[in-house]
Length: 141
Image (cartoon, rainbow, N blue to C red; front, top):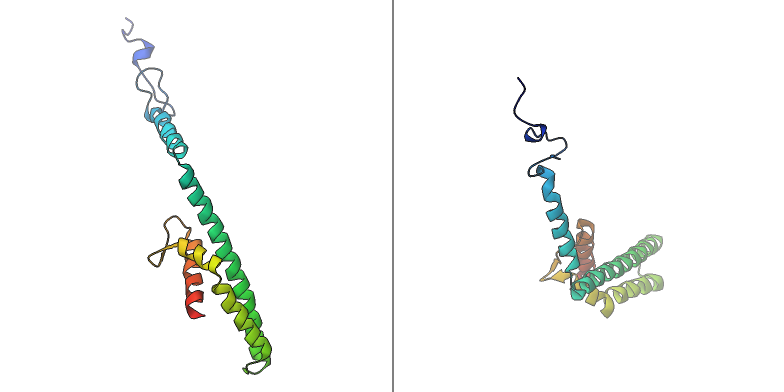
């Protein structure tokens, strides 16, 4: 005697795909993909502008820190060469360093990248450390 159940009653899940029924675990993928699309689609122009502004602020702060590093290397070399004595060149390098960290555009970028003295949310850990370092440089000059 043959079995009364047809092959469609006996569902096997292979990779989450079912021939009948709810479709297994992977059936929720469509909802997830739609939610992600909606989330990125609903970003306002203001939010997009903020992200771009943060990115350009990070780039400017990074550029200034690189220039500061170069100046500080030159200053160290100058001080070693002069035996620690103040020279016209070391004064000039200190002045350039002070000018870099007191530049209003740089300070505005740094202010936008901090809230109540802490780096803003959304920065990478590398960017976070860079903002902290930049503030230390400003405070030490």
